[in-house]
Length: 393
Image (cartoon, rainbow, N blue to C red; front, side, top):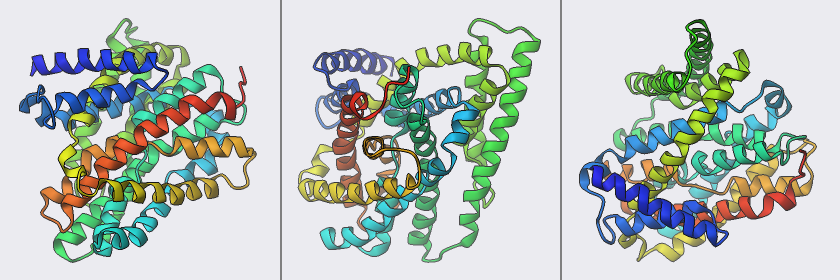
């Protein structure tokens, strides 16, 4: 396992630097490194590492959302509240509807299988989007209208929305019965996740200040609480849910609110931690892909993904109606909602493992969605932000 982790970090870093030198996003290099070292090619990553890859990806996702929380200012959140809330579910909803319409035509699958596919591929990738929005916030792009803050808040929440929809649909596919109680987990997971995160963030800030913790200890404590949140989410499997991802984000938000100086210090620690886990995350995303599964239906899947991006773009436009954003800023918001990676890598194979109909083709389309949208979205964000957003420094 240690040798595999060494390969992941070193080879991923080197390929990332190579792509960065070519003015391309380094994450493309990380994904390519994962493909090369994964089971599809040289098989340099041992099975024990692949077995815990979902946990490692989950940790990386929690780190990026914690960084998001530590950077969200209350005044910025008030400024972008309505469109951010709409962007947390409207683009994903329209993409799911588009999948239900188009997937049966393209692949002959049932409407239920198409809905499950839609729930998988409708999620944006926080690891791609949030990291870039944080960078733009630091540079001052779109600051006056809060464009990066709006995208950051909306994209961070839409994962929770689609995962709950996915859980309800797979339960329906397995049992043939739709349980309304399963939908109760959506509002409860949001409410309890935010409330729990805010409470812990407040208590944690007070404890760090009271006991004068310094150095790496505040980062260690905050990281430990994030892992505990994940354990709580896994324990609450009934109709009363708990969102660890929202809790982590809310915790960071409250820490910034209570003690901004202390929060900035914690933020630096997690920025450094993210540099390692970003490589691990995207290398493992690449390693999880099966190139063989793409060969038969890959081209049709690409066409489907491109058409679904139109539905998604329409959802983004509807979300920002009535705002002060100009057409360039609206275009940037559409570009920022393109990338998919983390959720698709995490749950794309679940229908196949469950033995559900069309499980293999769902996995194939999930892989294609990552290969097409993660690099495309990252390139568009990186190459257009200085032309589409105002520099408000």
